[in-house]
Figure 1 (tube, one colour):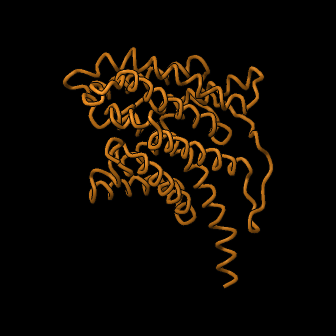
Figure 2: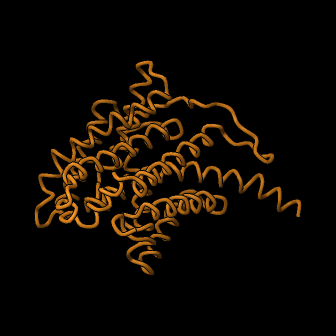
Figure 3: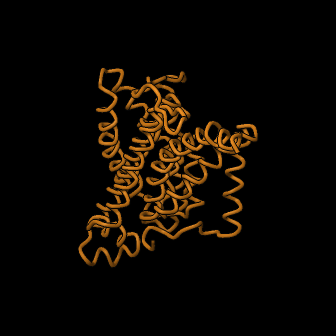
Length: 297
């Protein structure tokens, strides 16, 4: 019995905390991705590059002497107008075309390639490391956990709760869900659908940027970081259900726990294929994912 308790305490508990800390950051990124799809029906292939841009903006602010906590607030505020302009200047130009799903996918994919090359030209291929703003460890039930990962869990949970409250408990959220359910009906009721579309896209981009600067002290900052992280975010969105906030939350926490705990038994190089296998199984059994869309859930 003592051996089992020790294993649970010193082997599984740290992995669970690690999975939770990464999971909330993945959920933040997946939330932006799923909200954009749930409202606009746009699969934003450049979402990973916006995540990387948030990390680069944060690193630049820190290099200029800005405090990390101020940078954490400034990055989403900087990213939101960039997302708004992206939707107005690019997405809207092809959004009303008959084959808009393919056009928006190709457009955002092309934008992702351009942004990645811009990062390489401007910042260079070398990674940038960011000092952890919260040092030290805390002891919980006899197990020591890094304070920054505990902070990530706390701030991530607060942001996720705030997003849920805004979407489901406010008039603004009702307008977003109405536009997602039936844009023509929402427009006839006085909802400024085009502004809601652009604002939602901007909000999703801001969440991606926030996740980028939040994870930068753990993973460093480099040009292809968006490409590496977007695969997990897309897997979360697909498993949870395209356009489902609840699905993104549950799937994000579940898949990161699978990835974290499986690394105790198999090589870490096999943890991602295992997660993708879960996605394949879910799609075989329930092609629409675990939950419904934004306008229906």
